[in-house]
Image 1: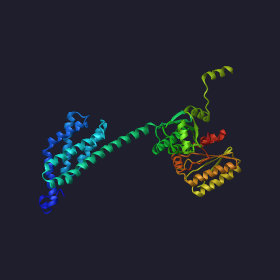
Image 2: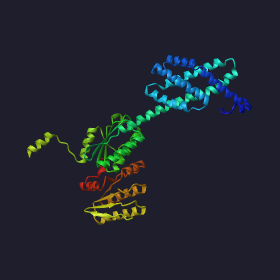
Image 3: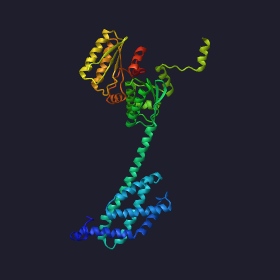
Image 4: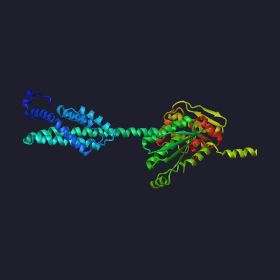
Length: 302
Length: 124
C-alpha cells in the first residue's frame, strides 16, 4: 500500500492519507533527530542503562539506532533492525549489559518519540491518533519485540554453547588397569547426556577389552527415578557387552531418596566409595594389590 | 542360512554368519540343545558379532537357548554384541537378564575355562 503512487492514492483517500502521514512522520523525526536523540541519551544515561558504554560509543550507537528505527518506519522493512539487534544483543551479552538495560533503553526511546509526536500533533487529534496509534506504535512495538527476541536468542545460543562444552568435558572413560575402566560422572545427567555417556562407555569397553567398569557417581548432585533409570540402562548395556559394572559413590541422601521413591536398584552392584569399588573390581578381574614390603618379606622367606 | 556349530574340546562354538530368519534361529536353537547332550558339552559360546539388529524374537530365542542348555548341563555365553546393538537393546528393555555375556569369542572361551561366571553376570 505504501508503494502506491500519489495518482492512485487520490482514488483511495484513506490509504493515500496513511502514506503521506508516514512521510510526514519520517520527515518530522528526521528534523527532530538531534533534539530527540539528545533527550534519549540523557534519559537512558540517567537511568543507568548505558553505564558500560563510553561517551563516544553512546554518540555513534544512538545515531545508528535512531536512523535504523526511522528507516523501519519509512520503508516498513525490518531487515536492518533485525541485523543490528542481533549484533547489539551479542555485544550486550558479552559486555555484561543486561537484557533489562537493552530493552529499557529502547522503551525509553519509544516514550520520547511518543511524547514528541503528541506535542507535535496535539492541536489535531485525528492526525495524532492516526500517526501515533496506527503508524508509530506498531513499528515501535515491532522493533521492541525484534530486539527482545534477539536478546533471548543470544542467551539461548550462549546456554547451548556452554552445555556443549560441559558435555565434552565431563564424560571421560579411563583405563585403570588392563580390563578395568573407570567412568567418573560429574554433573547432571539428562537423557541426551546419558545416551552420550553410554555410547562412550560401550565404545571404550570394546576398544580396551574391559571386563569390569567402575562407575563413580559421587559428582552427580541429584539422583531421581529418571537418572536412576538412565544409570540402569547404561549398566545393562555394558553387561550385554560382557562387562560387569560396579556403581560407587551413592551418598546416604541419594540412597534414601531412591528407596523412598521406590526405585529398584537391586540389580546393581553398588559400593559406598570409589576405593572399595576399585578393590572389588580388582578382585573380579583377578588382580591383587600387595605392598612392596609384603613382597620383600615373602621373598625373604622363600 | 545354516549356522555352523563347531566342537572345541568341551565347548561348542556357534558363530552366526549373517542375519537369520526366525526359522533359522529356531533351527539353531534345536540343534544346539540337541548337540549339547550328544557331545556332552559343558559350555556353549554363541557369537552374534555380525548381527547389527537384535529384535525381540532374536533376544527371546537367545535367552531360551541359554536357559535350555543350562538345563542340559552346559553354560551358554553370548558374545560379540556390538555397542550400538547393546544400546538399542537397553532402550527397548531387552536386557537378556540372567544370560551370561562376554566381549568376544576369546572372552567367552576364557570365561568358560575359568569356570567363573562370565563377565556380565559377575558381581550381581
